[in-house]
Length: 214
Image 1 (cartoon, rainbow, N blue to C red):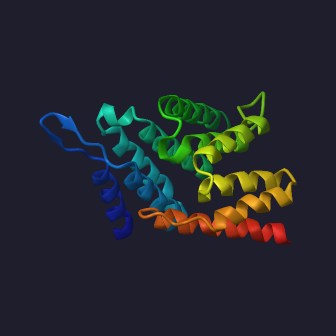
Image 2 (image 1 turned 180 degrees about the vertical axis):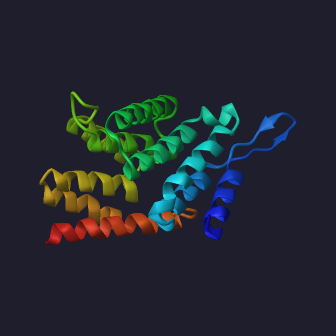
């Protein structure tokens, strides 16, 4: 194991911890968990990401039940599992994993639809967008569009909400509408603590805008 990987694994394990004072549970901030996900997604070599995601999931499992039951933790878990599917898929097992992610997102949205600026809606849109269609799985363009739009209601100027919906429209051969959302994404403000995620997503935005111009 490389020194980088060993250090990163240790960091992830120690991140999702808690301290108790007078029996009060303290959950790791969702933004900190999202930042760890971003480090794996954008700064870790591809051949090491799966191990890192699995380690992050194991560390999440060790968090107090009160933390795991929050909408934010459910969204973070869905993010990690979705990234793992993108790295490696295998037919039937993947379909089971897609159903698991949908369940997590449905629970998160039911608990708090505005959690993490409506990120649960955007991820649900992505799940409907990228999954195989019926009868194999839950993929459905109309459901994807509706969920993306709900995410935009909560975060109309966000880089992720506008990127995913813009790319969806591009793939539906609606270039003018796609460009509108992608340009908003390209101008989104970078929030403190999301520097890695923002810069990584900005590259995705620029890549899709380039495709539109070709």
